[in-house]
Amino acid sequence: MHENVTRDDFPYWMEIEVRWGDMDPQGHVNNAVYFTYCESARISLVGEIGIRGRTAGPHGPVLVSTSCDFKREVVYPATLDIGVRVEEIGQRSFAMRYGLFLRGTGQLVAVATSVNAWVDYTEGKSIPLPAEVREALGRYK
Amino acid sequence: MHENVTRDDFPYWMEIEVRWGDMDPQGHVNNAVYFTYCESARISLVGEIGIRGRTAGPHGPVLVSTSCDFKREVVYPATLDIGVRVEEIGQRSFAMRYGLFLRGTGQLVAVATSVNAWVDYTEGKSIPLPAEVREALGRYK
Amino acid sequence: MHENVTRDDFPYWMEIEVRWGDMDPQGHVNNAVYFTYCESARISLVGEIGIRGRTAGPHGPVLVSTSCDFKREVVYPATLDIGVRVEEIGQRSFAMRYGLFLRGTGQLVAVATSVNAWVDYTEGKSIPLPAEVREALGRYK
Amino acid sequence: MHENVTRDDFPYWMEIEVRWGDMDPQGHVNNAVYFTYCESARISLVGEIGIRGRTAGPHGPVLVSTSCDFKREVVYPATLDIGVRVEEIGQRSFAMRYGLFLRGTGQLVAVATSVNAWVDYTEGKSIPLPAEVREALGRYK
Image 1 (cartoon, chains in turn yellow, cyan, orange, red):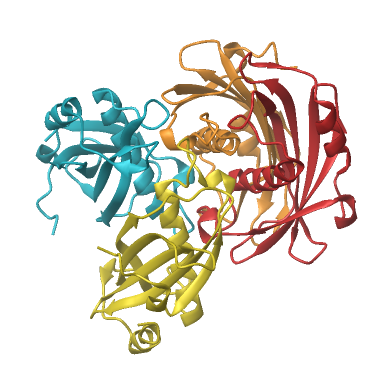
Image 2 (cartoon, helix red, strand yellow):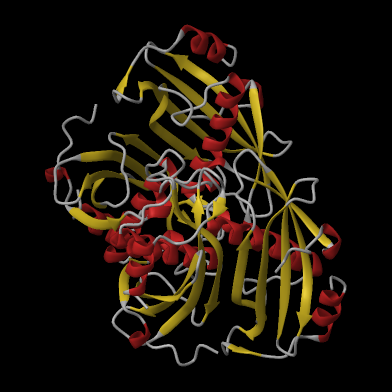
């Protein structure tokens, strides 16, 4: 269902160097590690926007859900380009989409998604996205 | 949307001891580690059925997609009970659902899903699920 | 050189369930994961003593060095018993030794060591071990 | 004791991008991850030499021991330069030393060591290092 995902879909990019230790006994990158790759890209993007997370302020993003469709196995040595797009900006949450490609190619290895709620860390409940966060995220739609 | 997930939904169970090192700088279990927990439960279940994976035969399961909805954060020290149910048995794939609970309670911390294709490892393409695998998986629906 | 390490050498014990995902492409538990196992045992022991680390107070332990000798490979499924002994209590640091055995057996799979300095986290420098910490560690020599 | 370790000590270099997920609840790179960094550098070096490990032939290296002295904590975002030197070439084993520096600086964050035995994988016992391996390793002393 993601057959038509191309590099053009993604405004933000990050490079990931696959480590030998990312592989599992099947001799390819382990499924859980794709989520670490996406986390790296997400944190890089939100860091660029100026969003920092719970160590830096009283409210911020909390991961609510994430998913990944695996298209091709990845074997060390390899470098990936991860594209990120902000898919949706809701009242109290935002969704991102990730395209993982072999470096410098259109060869898609995985498509992933994430949803983050905006949370008041002290109260432990979701609150509306601040206007400046909405605006900043909007630049990556 | 998983509000009604209860322990009764799952016929197969596995216990997971949370490690301190499973936590990230936010002081709770990292999102990628939930997929390792589910992998442990999935491998335990398919091992019980007698399915072994690519190191053991010419065909077997390959993970096609996986997702997780995070309900509560988990902090070390903790033990989780992971329930697994075979959700769907298709021609060439099967889907599983996972419920992660704090040990011995109905407190749901996450709900996850996975889809595995049945693959001829040499050819690298999906083939029909063997009858005995269908039958064995059917016992965990 | 650790040929004579036996279970009798260790006063504190912790059980570790090996996860499938702890293995690497060589089909055995990855070397880095042994350090996670030892970390689990160390944190369990110091937690029992009441030492909490930097999230809980102005001073506490910081890992200065660690080592591991690998005796036998470990393959999932397996459970390990990790024995810990406080090897040395210095002015500003303490050393621990770990023996990793296959559960319920004398089969040694690894011997590890660690040294922790006692650090004033604000100043970022080592300070003398508090008397009560010395005393508590002394019970595991 | 490694106070005098400098970049000049290392003939082989590899760059490591620290991932956010490499950090632990203490907010710095977790101790076990340093061993993954060294593994990456070791595998890169032995790959360059043409040594492949057990998936590629009947004999090859097996990690026997490893150690790390932590000099400074590393916090994401950071890039490390890892220098490697072959420290010793024995009859049936070889030792390596690693210097981990903040990228482009002389700021040492860790010094690590490893010993690999040369093993006949089928027999499961150490055998003499092949002459061409000795010669190749000798270029990195």
